[in-house]
Image (cartoon, rainbow, N blue to C red; front, side, top):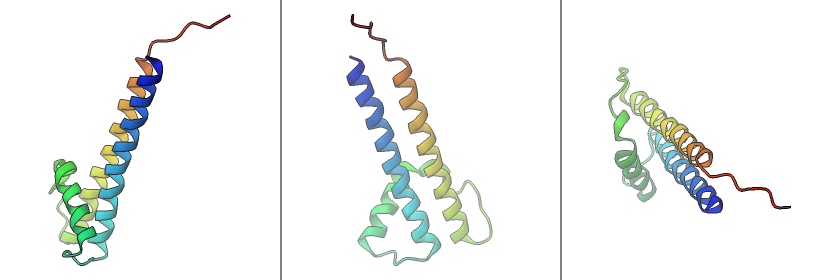
Length: 101
């Protein structure tokens, strides 16, 4: 049981980090004005829209490029922190095994 929960914690951390990584790549694409028709940019935009929707239009500086970069980076940070906290909670709830003699 402990191995399964440990594996689950690792999967949660890796998935959350992967989502955060793709959102950061999108933020970099926006900041450096990448071609929006590029398939890689479209993929990362889709990840941002599906998994980072909660920070869209959160901050609204005058420059829309800066606004989207900051909001996307914040979404990525939330995913990393949430993934770490959930994985630590899973590990903490893992039953302890007795020592074998």
